[in-house]
Image (tube, rainbow, N blue to C red; front, top):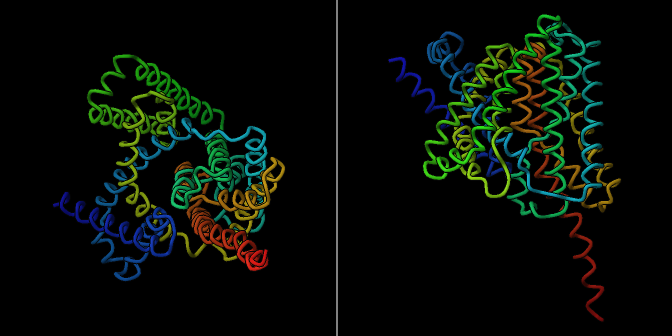
Length: 417
């Protein structure tokens, strides 16, 4: 009976995700925005309609616990593909432009995140601030505002046929570098969250295990026997890789760090480059994770959103969105201009850099699990991520109209010649 109940709930979750994707397409937004929004709001919406007693009957604690396991497995598999994509990014824009855009889109958002942390520490209550060490908290907030969503950005570029444009290649390459740095800073913030020497050493043990697991996987997957097995039995290779990723991630979590770190090191350890047979296997593993990830959104909505609305002030929402937009757009624009890009290309870079989406949620989940962030603060940052990502498409369309309008107006002047 429990299994039937779980299957019914999962079917409802996937139906909500599909409805979100359809709504996003009609609104000309990336489908992942619809998935995230529908998933996050599904739990609170059902709770508001049914009330707590009926909601607990529809989603009892044992079923919710199983949903968490399923959602975590999907997140791990998706993150393996994302980490591998960060390592194997193929776009190669000019080094000078890439350096400037990366610096502008990383340093200014980090500063804006630190400024937001200062506001929370000095102006918000303990329910929002939490009890994390100050250094860990400030660094975590800085990371939250510097993240860019590579998968969502790639979808937007592909849908708008911008993936081969100068601005598209430059922005995607810079976002890959920024997210790589962001993961390193996130790991440091989680290590600092222990607040004690013993806790820090425990975190180092988890990092050591993750590094050893990555090295072992890298060595095994690079052998000729592993490559032949991957070519002959890609499905079996994908299954074994998924099992290994989940095992490493859960072990890292058991040792005191987030499972997200374990999944990331597995993705980074997989051989990349031209001629590698692992690329289609990783793509299939990532697709499975992407299909299951909506469960993670629902669990987040149930466990975070239902507890957070009363504690977060509207001023904090406004400030988070303002600093989130300002850090990425201003930093991206100034970096692109300093790197020699045109005004129009710099504007496109600025708008694209403001994309966050799923990658932001993954980082926030790590901070929440480690106790660095509170549920109300996660709510604020999730809303910021959704708003900034939803702005990308309309702003790009506006830029297209403003750049094509002058040429259209100029045609009648050339007609007599």
